[in-house]
Length: 345
Image (cartoon, rainbow, N blue to C red; front, side, top):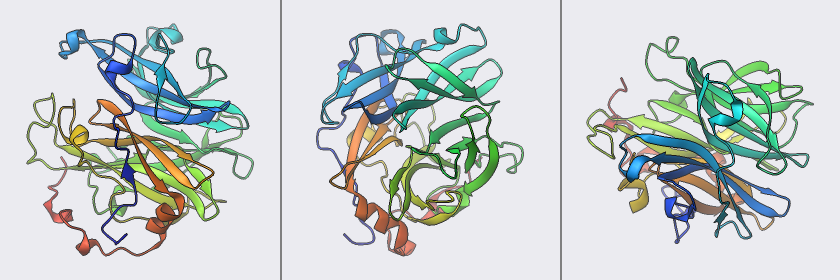
């Protein structure tokens, strides 16, 4: 592997989950959370269901669950497991983008929810993926929250991406922050972890992707990065889609995850495959949401592609750590010159 080659390899059978695999009305199946729980792989996925699959209008947005014995072949349950009706409150409109973390044998899910007064992030707990206990919800606007899989210094810790529109020059500059909690309910001690300007291939926003996994070198953390180019035209079902989402990789300190041990200056995975760059609702999108470290050292990373299907890529943990700790010469990277990105507006 040279400096320009990512060790992350796409699964040849991608996508691993799509609308045709779902036994109820589904149009876009993506941005899933994945974990190992009670001896099985579990995936909770986002389903955006549109009328007649033509984007006439959104008829439903819900979370579905699927199970697997190998992390590759999935069987979806017969009905969604969570939607806005669960909250029994007209304030809540749509729930989506689940992220799963197992802590001390408990399965916790971070999620985003649109409300009539802003986008909020929530944390729920389940033992069967049908019954849920809500521990906390943020004020608007916050999302992309992920929990570390164990307490650190006696506290639960989460990464998150708030929306500071006015304080970042009135433009999109969304960064990755960290907060902690003694009980999953009350959160504070918030700190900036990494910012857009850390990444040469981002000019719009960065944020958490999948919950981190623990290694002896630090917390391996996969992220999403966004660059915006106003010369991009129609790249999906919308009139204009000017953004590109990539996956990035970082290593955070085991005792203090607000400290960055190292990170790759090149994308871990950028949109290249056919199912990532064409045929989707928003092309040129890779959004990681699940990461599993196997005993063999293999790392499975699950990601939404083109906001339409769910995919899988794998690498060895040592190679991912190496990406975060070795120096990479940016000018050696083909086709990714930072200067080609026009200023986000």
